Image (cartoon, rainbow, N blue to C red; front, side, top):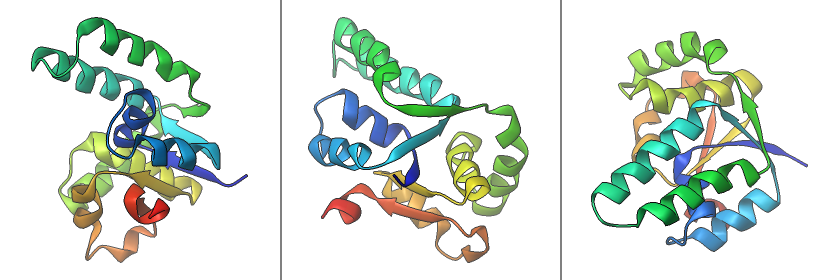
Length: 141
């Protein structure tokens, strides 16, 4: 089974009903998943934000966060990714958090699956990163 790196945009589609949730579930069923440990904290931050905005109730958000450990993810320590993520962040002008996923994909020569179109656009013009990033709608569609 081929491995791929996922980011919060994919993880949350697997945990909550969203546009393209079914496609995200299909994609993760066909791949072994890897992610930096930061994924858990970032998912928690996004869920807390959605609770504060009234988009989701606290109980449903807490359940989704608890369900994160049910996803078949091989967790990778963040510390080993910080240096390469820093270099990528400086190069492409994205937050270090986003670049942790890119660094993992580069380090392990894996595809990164995301639903974050702006992340893909930030890589335009930076072919030296040697990372394959696929948008969910393009992978499934």
